[in-house]
Length: 308
Image 1 (cartoon, rainbow, N blue to C red):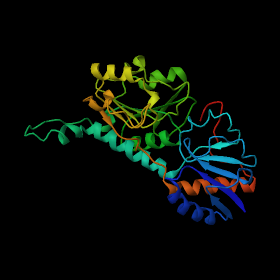
Image 2 (tube, helix red, strand yellow; image 1 turned 30 degrees about the vertical axis):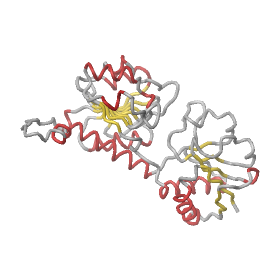
Image 3 (cartoon, rainbow, N blue to C red; image 1 turned 90 degrees about the horizontal axis):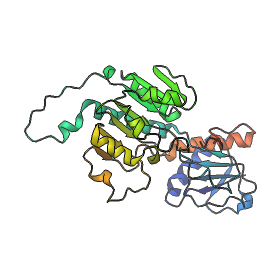
Image 4 (tube, rainbow, N blue to C red; image 1 turned 120 degrees about the vertical axis):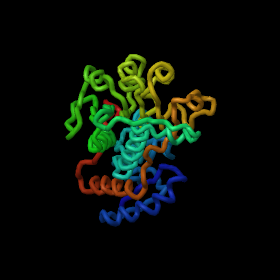
């Protein structure tokens, strides 16, 4: 019997209590899934950064802490967490991100807001360029970024991508390292931020880098709020940027008095770009536990030195 502690919160428990046993059975695992195992008996913990367990020291037999979020910046700095930590790489999460990014990229590319909000009897004769004349840059080429970049390239956009280390993605011109960042952003018309949040990426979009973008460029941020210097973004929107569609923020929910709510060039969405789906996430969790019980390497382990 494998003891799995679900510590991702009472709100998520009903959905996972249904999905996880099915996934465990398909993986051939005999699991006792509960929210209240005695710490010393726990073999695996399923959690989130704001989950029920914040002190991991009593869990002396725990082989793996499986995060249900893709982002891990709010859990990696926990000094009591010495067990291996895995982040969530889930096909449902990836598909949701691709849909949000593609939808908003096409919204801005086609100028949909002009017609959706312009039902006032004025015939607005606007014809957008074709996709191949609209350079797109994706910052972050992990599972989510690579999937979004590939999808947009498949629609005909010339896509550039940047990551800290070199990547090779069909149909995407890739850049790496500090020098490659400026090259990837130069005259981009749509920029999509899908980087993890680390000390190196915090405020990566600052005044200097925002100035590299094409006039009227659009920024989509479904990654992490602190990837952007908010003051720099507001200044750039007032000067030369066309729009920012933001799904993530330093403080969530975004306070009602925040200037993003009232800015005519900002769209706020409430951290919905992609949500972990229990049904598909359960298969990822079950596979990692199966690997642990078989003595195989865990998937998607977090590198503590890099922060993701």
